[in-house]
Image (cartoon, rainbow, N blue to C red; front, side):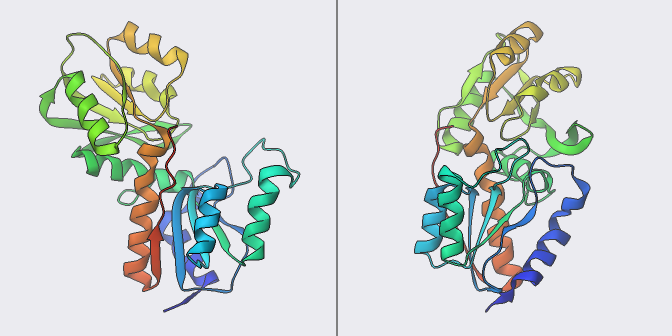
Length: 253
């Protein structure tokens, strides 16, 4: 089966509601390709490796969380940007990207999917820059130590999670926001959470965690955000009857 590209975009916009977000990059179609899509490749970041994988798979569209044309990004099409876009255009592949909308979707989003993977049933939202749902909170079914959560994250995500310990503090309430949301740790403190999980860590994150007695886990930007694009691809295959596959280009970041 195939779907017109414009109909695919209409469906995605209806599902992910990008108009509700003031984002850091354009959501939706970023590079125009074929007029119809029968084979969609999904991944986290539109790196050269993922573009090459889409070409090898003979994909008509590449759907990602991290696309191009970020705010404050240099505009000239030179270097790696030229190479990536040249490859997409040469093979007539549509590049479709959804950033914050894919973070926040209540079922398919990165945060929802991470919670589902870890068995954390969200019961409250966190917010950033006025965006509700960018982070989630849950009460654990069984209180855990920081080392137990660190081991669970490392096992489920397939990479070692960094743990800033709050010695003696049992974890009952936990919050999380995938990717580079370490700055939301202060909101986690204000909400009275025992632990907060994101993908990255800054130097200041360490001191905020230690001085407030909250566990912090940096579990990897890529590792925490691979599940939204994967879930979205599976959803599109089921609902639109097109071939969709997720390609994971591993990253240690």
